[in-house]
Amino acid sequence: MRAWILPEIFMKNIKLLSALAAVGASFVAFEAHAGMVSDAHGNVGYDTAEECDAAVQSGQAKFYESFTHKPTLKRPGETSVQAATIKDLGPQYRLGACDKGVGRRMGRDGVSKALQGKYIPFSPDMQVNVYLDASGKPTRASMQQCDNWFSGNAPRAVPLPPEHAPEPAAEAAPAKNEPAAEKKAGARPYVFGTAGALRDGASVKRGNRRNKDRDTSAAGQVGAGVQFNEWLGGEVYYQGADKQEYDAPENLGNEKVEVRNDTYGGRLTAGTKVAKKARVFAKAGVAGVRHKSKTAGAKDSDTKARATAGVGATVDVNDNWAVRADYDHYFKRNGDEDVKWKGADYLGVGAQYKF
Image 1 (tube, rainbow, N blue to C red):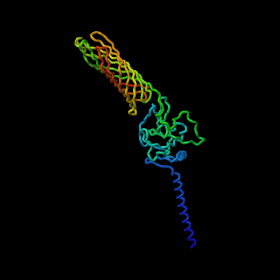
Image 2: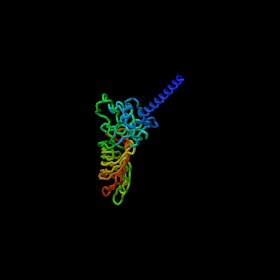
Image 3: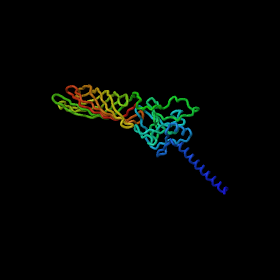
Image 4: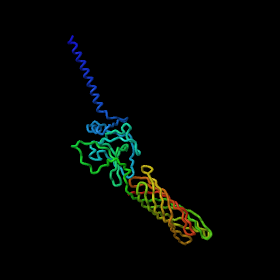
């Protein structure tokens, strides 16, 4: 009887030990993943930076993969973008990054809600956008495919073991969580030229008779300017126009009055970006407008200071070149007692080059 009972007791103990082992393994697995969460796309995040670092250092981390596509978006003061990888940001990024996930801000969606506030592992080979200022200095990095922000201007690097820690990088993207928009961009000079048409008008008096007439001719502007900051700038320019003709009073034999318009001006501009590459601005200033006229063989020249106002727009082609359009109005100003100049309007399209 005992010989039969002992094997049965032994088998029950074996089953009990197996069950205890399974529970223990489950507990260990639970402990290992207690601080990790996943989103609907399979990306993971950890409660603490240390947990994320340990997963990367042990080779167990699942690196983040972007699931949206967004073009680059420059902030004020940023002039160009370069493609790179996280490990290109500096030798401290040899193992990659564990950075805190952030939500939507400044036109970008951010990571999924489940990972916001969690530490997300990023591969050292992950493609990033590196944004540069006018001097070519890096200001920040973003995820290349989706252009999402990191928690700072650069992601938090995974620490290397002490024996493998690199020397500090001489030049790396700043890791301070300081918006690049707060960086003060220097003044940027530019030149421009447009071609279009000028519509001018005059009221000519001879004796007791006065004729009012208008004419439109080909015209163009060339000038130089300085963009002081994101909003304000200043320009000086020259505007020239082809010959215009106005009807003369009958007592001059119906001869035409031939007039040429030359303008030298200065103005302030104030504007803002309305799209990634498009900017609109208003203009106001003073111009010296010279009319050189010829009537019945007699020549005359009249120069008057006139207020001017207008609007313009530029669309960037690349970091230096832009397509430019201008509209300018010159307010009417009386000349001598025989000639009164009406308001004039210039409309032109051309190019602008930023240094």
